[in-house]
Image (cartoon, rainbow, N blue to C red; front, side):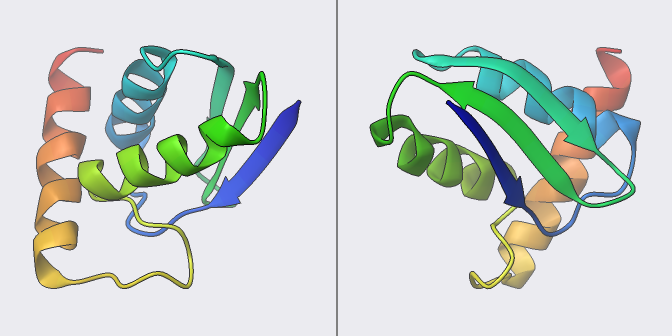
Length: 89
């Protein structure tokens, strides 16, 4: 089932690379795509249960869902995720 989430703190291709890499490691998640222009992450899941796992993983990486709290530590995590994504491209 195809899902799309709007996220915060998405800045560049490095961010997108980190998100795709990390979400693709989750069981039941496939075809992860990130659109930097619309701040959207799209992915396929086997069931509804994986969506909450994806939201939590995105938040842990520093990319909370639009409408969720976006604290300074989350913003800082996104910069780290961005840098890691740029190095592993």
